[in-house]
Structure formats: C-alpha cells, structure tokens
Length: 419
Image (cartoon, rainbow, N blue to C red; front, side, top):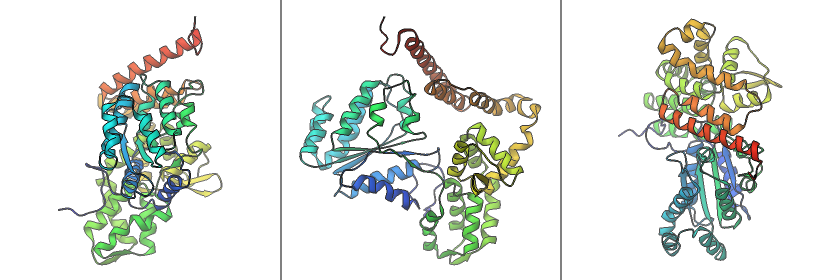
C-alpha cells in the first residue's frame, strides 16, 4: 500500500497541505457573528477544489457553527436549466440533512420547491447550513440558466441560515457583462473581495512539507530555497518533487544538491504537468514567460504582472518589475521559444498544426477589444476543447450561437425585448 501523502493527479482529491493562512481567512468569514458569503478564485490546477473540499469536511465535523455542509462540484454534469439546478441543489442539501435534521430532509423529498421553507425553519431555530459550490463558472455560462435562478439563490442567501462559498477561475463580476443584470443581485450578497488561491507562499512550506518528518526527513535552508526555486510554489510541481523526496529518502537531512538531483529528474518525468500548466496560461502570458527566459527582468501591464505572480511563475525583483521564479517552467518556456519564430515548425505538418492552432486562435482572441465577455468566454472554451473534446467544442458553438442571438434581440428590441 502506497502511504505517500503527496498526490499528483489520479483519482480522488489530495489532502490539503499548507494553505493555513487562506484557510484561516475563510474560517474567519464563516464563523464571525454574522458570517459572509465568500467567493474563492484561482487558476485551474492550483488547489481550489482541495481547499474547498477540506473546508466542507472541516465544518461538517465541527458542528458548533453549521449543522452540516455540502460540497457540490458544478463542473461535473453542470445543470442546464433553472429547474434542474434547483432540483439537484435540493437533493445535495437533503443528503447531509438526513443524518442531522431528518424531518427537514423528508420535507424536501415530499415537497417540490421547499428550499425556502427549509431555510426559514432553520433560521427560526438558529441553525445554519454551509453550501460549498465549486466550478461555479460552468453554471453561469449555461444559456438555460436565467435571472430567475439567481433571484432564488439571492433569496436563499439573504435568509440568514444558508451560507455560500463559491469557487471559480474568475471573479463573479467577470462572469457576467455590465449589460447583463441576471447575476447582479446575487453577486451583491458576497464579500467585496474574493479570496485568491495561487502558488504556495513562504508561510505555506512548513505545513506542506510537514509529512516528510514521518519518514525522518528534515531539510536545511538551502534545500527549502531550492524547492521554492525549482517549483515556484506551483502546487502540482511542489507535490511531484515532495512525492519523490518522500519515496527516495528516510532518516536524513536533505540539502540543495539532493533537491537539484530530483528536480533534474522531474524536468523530464513531469513534462506533461508543465505542458498542462503552460496550456492553462493565456497566450499573452505564454509570450511573457518566453520573454522571461531571455531577460533578467520585465515590466508588464498590471493584470499580467499579477497573474504571473499568482501562478508562481514570476516574482517581483523591484517595484513593478518581475523575474522568473519557477526554474521548471522557465526551462519549459525555453523549449517553446525554439519553434515560436518558425512558421514551418508551427504549421508544417498535420500534427504540428493540431498542436499549435489553438495557440494561434487564442492569440487572435486576445486582440479583439470590446466584445461581449460571455460571448468571448464561450469562444475561448470552444477553442480549448478543439483537440481533447471536439464534441464539447461543438456544444460550445451552440452556446455561442445562443448568446449571439441574445445580443441581437437585446440590440433590436432593448433589454425588456418589447415591440
């Protein structure tokens, strides 16, 4: 049986290691006299789901604040309509209630649309329910999800017994356009500033590397510095390196040279991880990473500056300037630079074309200004699915059509669509 606590991909969700500071912030929001609804954002593969699952589990066991909790990943079989969302939301709530409030669970089973009644009853008895909704982006983009649902969710959230934590790759304010008022009231019930999940910071390393002590492994300062330099604090890269350390050593103090040896091995073994992390970056960030392989420092627009820092691929060297902070990603970016200037390398054969057409389309998309954000997001998703999931790309094309028709109707007839 493999007892290595460091999981890289595979089934299930890894245990949360590190993240003590952001977890404490989340708990503070949820345990104060009047809790807050909280939105958690961060890039894919950076541990949002790990954090949110741990949060739901923590408060499920710690019953002095919430009678129970649910964790619902909306990215898996996303609800397509208001009715489907509400039915499944009721089912997700009923399951944990069965063991702590069986009479309320039975009421939900017997009565359609009984959610508000349940939340009113819980408020009257002073109890609270925590709902953790992950993958929130996937629901927002569904054309069958309307203002009605968000108004219902607003009512639930304002009742004072249901408290929400949502997770997505973008902020709630970015999930709908300024002209689209469907979610405005709902987003208004959340705390002003979302919590961002990115790379590990200096205060995370002690907790993240804590399991090494069970193998009698300690590390000197030079080893810790190199763990950070090689991985940039990117969770999957850090887990891959720590996994190898856990398997290879026992009863030893590891040094810089030990970390360097393992990282060199990972540079080849974990190439798919780096490829996925690279592909998750917008094209302009990929170009910035290539630039960082040629220059000691770069100055970038604030949005890209902050994004590279959040992902752990760069750190501030002085005010408004960045330098590379993830040696593994820097090496990967250097490999991408070789062919970036060669059209033949990019599109010279069918395999190369398939590998690079997505990057070309993404780059073209970044050049479009002033387009509807929801429409742009659907085009982006369609591009991302071209190779790995062409059927999903076709589905996104239908959603692009649906959104385009909505925009045409709004332009022709106005927001109330009256003739």
